[in-house]
Image (tube, rainbow, N blue to C red; front, side, top):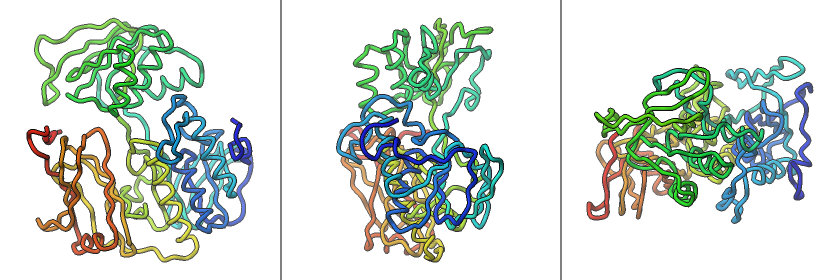
Amino acid sequence: MGGHPGGPGIVAVRGAHATMSGEVDVCVVGSGPAGLAAAAAARRAGAGRVVVVDRETSPGGILPQCIHDGFGLEEFGEAFTGPEYAERAAGDAACVGVEFWQGTTALALGPGPELVLVGGSGRQVLRPRTVVVATGCRERTRGNILLPGTRPAGVFTAGTAQRLINVMGVLPGRRAVVMGSGDVGLIVARRLHLEGCEVEGVYEILTRPGGLVRNVVQCLHDHGIPLHLGHTVVEVHGDRRLEGVTVAAVDADGRVRQGTRRRVPCDTLITSLGLIPELEILRGLTDGTVDESMRTGLERVFLCGNAAFVHDTVDCVTACGRLAGRAAARHAAGLRWPRRVARVEAGEGVRQVVPGALSELAEAARFHLRLDVEGFDVEVQARARDRPLARWRLRAVSPTQAVALTAGPARLERLRQDRTLAFVARPGKEEAGGRIHRR
């Protein structure tokens, strides 16, 4: 990659055969958008030596395979492709002195913190002052949902198909079915169509699309690709190569409706079944809950980006990484590790809330929520012992889009009055379409 000043062309990437030595203030695991933002922010906040380790040979995470535009509208005020965004983010980190250790895998993390790394030069142990885990997320596969049928070639996750087409120049097949309507699945459906593959349809088990409205319109409607809501793939057919799938309508509980099964001939099945935060490096050490500054339950270890909460846009991922990087720099400089004073939980109408804790040092907080409420004029409350401590009024919400709520010093002081608080969401007016989706 190369191009504008400050791009990855100037990034001094140390090879996998190099040996790391000397003290490190902040070590960031993962060179995707969250990791790059965390590293740059840590340097700007005064951290001395900041290194990024990643198993891939170049920075950017998933972005280099995302050749469509739309990245950076919030962060930079203009639309970039994925490779352009990665180039800008990596160049920004390089310009402030971040070191890149590409081709290096973080095998294990322990208290201290202590990182076990492996690259071309073998195994190394690094003891940085702070660690930021920015490992992103992975795709849910057909094995995760126990999809019945044979195991032929031709079944791909949406991300794998995207990499095959955009990076390797390989078309996965000639006639495809897409299972699930997550954003990556929608984008891949369009990409397959543009490359001449017949996309028979997108099948979504829920009664609403799983991706953003703009992606449903731009990727499906604009290209005449059918979207079948309340339908799913129930069986895979084929010996060596996929020959077809059986699809069916389902009820509200996900059970197949009698008489709705039909077989669809295809040689490619793309699964877009959701994303799972990649937390293997933290297994057995902490549960992945973070506080308002992205601190985990393991001292001097932070978690950010999609590894902490699957965000809707890369701009939100970047902002999350920046928050963690600044905090990591402060603790690397000697700021004491705070105790947690309140636990934050998801209550009625709320599927997930991050952060899941508030510390004694909290001066402000930005809460990210996934709601099960859909409609207009929706009220979100933070409650403790059935008492509302804070309220936010939202004009319109959907379960497919995350909600961000800000709490300043005064509101945060109220939220810390109790050891446990829960966020709840109340549906809006019935005439406005307000309702709760039961899962």
